[in-house]
Length: 325
Image 1 (cartoon, helix red, strand yellow):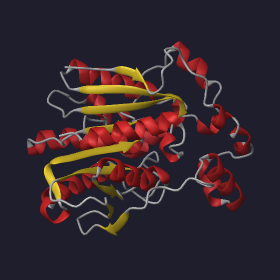
Image 2 (cartoon, helix red, strand yellow):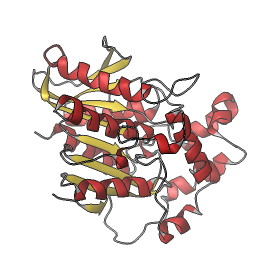
Image 3 (cartoon, one colour):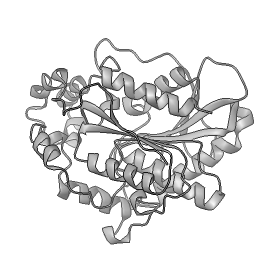
């Protein structure tokens, strides 16, 4: 059993919110919700600028193609030939109701990991929880996608024993639940689990006093307040929070025998207690787990440019976990 509770930058004390992020907070003035901003071109442009998806940064050029498996997905091929390459099955976030394969957290992250790890990345277009879609539909999509990748190792040019699974936010939840299901149902968990600012709890653990104080500096639009978080989770479950099991929220699972796990939390994130508690539960269960904190960053930082040192370090750690033998 091992656990490393570390930061992505050197200081041992809490870091202020990254100044380049704070400088962009005024862009969010007048935006009341992500849903309204996405529907209004002017607000969408401001939101895009805040999330740093406009401007100079360009993601790595990587060949892509649509997957032919049971679930819609996009395959990212590294410029590395071979038949034993590692692979990552990756899920974007979006609170189970939003997000797509084109958002930076999906597309840019897949390009970065494919390039850095020499890995085939399969980004999964799992079903979102609208119009009667609830758990276990998204969970089942992720499990099916992983099995397809593993079973298609020869045609994908990958090593079937080096297929990792990962995701961010709600995608981190789905990655955790799928890893547990694959351990239980297939007797073979993924090669590694990479969970970035994940939600592993139906009900969030309470924040520390320092986190609560720090979150007061974050604009309301970027917060996950308890009522909002409960709504997202109830909508995912399609029922009361008490109906959750360990496949829906990994903190409820018996974690013994889970694969090597990397958990990366954002320092300024209402969901941070969930990632920290999940990592601690992994450690107590004897899982080889590493937990790190992206200092000065907010939830969703994988939508930002790797020019930010903590984001660069997070991507490097993710690639290392995927490439490990």
